[in-house]
Length: 500
Image (cartoon, rainbow, N blue to C red; front, side):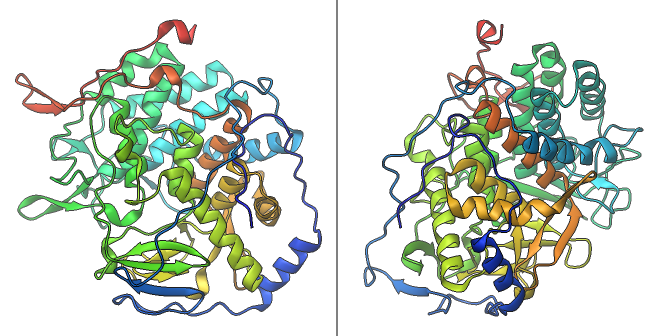
């Protein structure tokens, strides 16, 4: 089967309707009737089922990655500005309604999902992304954008910082107070990955709307990034203990290679994820993936992480060294994304199960799941944040379906989009439908609804990170003697002419 061409926002219009054609009807029936295979527990990798075959050292076939020849790319601006189909505008309005409905009047913040009253820096990044995309699509006017964005900046400029260095992991959306691990007032620690997403979107907003640049810079200058990476260049997190701050790697979420772009966007020279290529390879439907004797060392592979790099950066990251673009040690983000599509389509053709996997949230325990192509050495694993397996909760993800249908020209991606279209309402988009039963997971999240707005803005305008926001140089963090902290370099040239 040939590699699908990358989809850029021009040329053939998006005319996807909810039509229950033969491929979709067969797939939907399969989702309801086929029992999902039980994923094995967390253990050292071994020969597995579901077309997973393990080879050690040089005993297996040579490692191969998806071929990317003949990808027709369409550049930003080729499509007439403002042209989305009527259906796409309905989708955008539904996604925006999550933020319009869920915003706290007291703080201007939104919760990470329905049914809770706390937020994170990743969610604040979602909120800024949704605001910028909604303004570009003209769902909101300049006055509403200003009112909402100013409230967010007001919080960011005044929020208490964990250990007086970086934003706390969670805050109450009504009071703005930092929260501990039990979601009571206190301090949890900070997340280098969550902050990275926020930094990307603060940089985009500063360039797209230069009136706010000084306020954004005032926010970013509060952050002390001395401890943000380890000696190998991996992003860290900090948690609060009785003895103070304890640093730990944050590579188990799969988003490091994306989040690192946030620090580069403000001039900090950070490498890509430090992954030592191990000696074991696992084959899934003809594609090869690296695994390790200690499987948990390898981040989960899912659809969403590389898709953010496609929609926001056009798969052209901010690294100045090409080797820093190999996000899993052997593949670029573009190659990894195409590979994710390939193996999920092959699984569908092999089993009849529509497959579009990524992390997602639920309204009941377990509240957060990593729904993966491979994790902990096993293909098609669905695990919680502690690694416990939940094979019956595998999901056809709304976010993953939008990612593939936006970035790739593929009949399979269109079929995925048809499958999730029933999940939107006037209150926003649900997380997806379960592979086993076809039942809807109607929990609404900032991550999914912001991503849909990003995807639709991409369909209209192309990659969302402006060319004029790209740093010309990258350098180390700057230690200020007056404040005794390591600030982001801010060595970013702003091309005013490109904005005018």
